[in-house]
Image 1 (cartoon, rainbow, N blue to C red):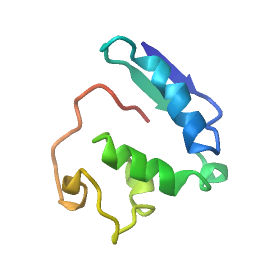
Image 2 (image 1 turned 180 degrees about the vertical axis):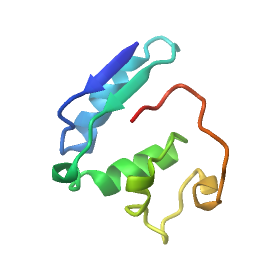
Image 3 (image 1 turned 90 degrees about the vertical axis):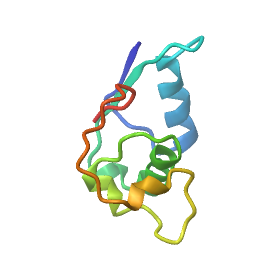
Image 4 (image 1 turned 90 degrees about the horizontal axis):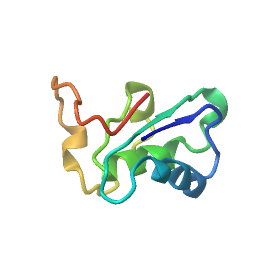
Length: 91
């Protein structure tokens, strides 16, 4: 139900594989990942993935979003004061 990435992988596919363990058979789960400057190599792809999956994008990752890209979740660029409460993300 809860996966914690103490050492975030540098490969986005490995990240997806790890967090995929949080939810099985239609159940919801939580993935918490620790991030620091050494993980900046994965930041652009991670940001894109979070946006497309309609997950919370932490402020420190927002700068990695491609303003020219088309994301499925276009609300990303709208200013919002609502708190993310889906319970499926984590930082």
